[in-house]
Length: 130
Image (cartoon, rainbow, N blue to C red; front, side, top):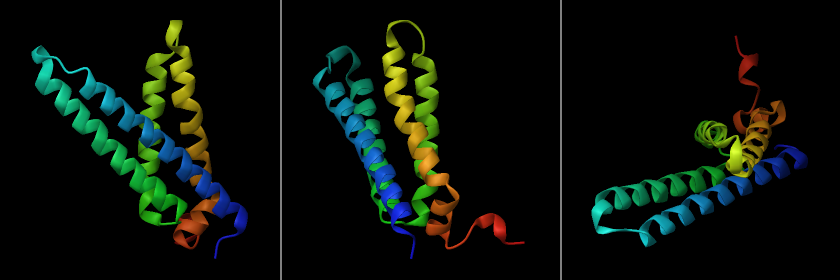
């Protein structure tokens, strides 16, 4: 059984993933609300992608909070994608968007790759085996 601090930190990581998933779903709703005839297919497929991404991230976030090992890779991959997006928003008037994307992404990655989190998720540090 993982220690209470590790469980709490994994729940924080899961909660941040759920917030990110909610933001993605909100972006999907905005995309659907702004549909125009000239870009109907693009708007619908973008919205479907955002909803699917949100659902996957929400499932992974809930699973990280419940200490399920399968969820670590999708969570880390999603945060790396967010960091790449954040980089593209740096500079000018969009730096605040970069900060909103980067800060939770870094926090989640740090929380799920900690040695104690690795031990909780996999039973032992994967680097320990020969």
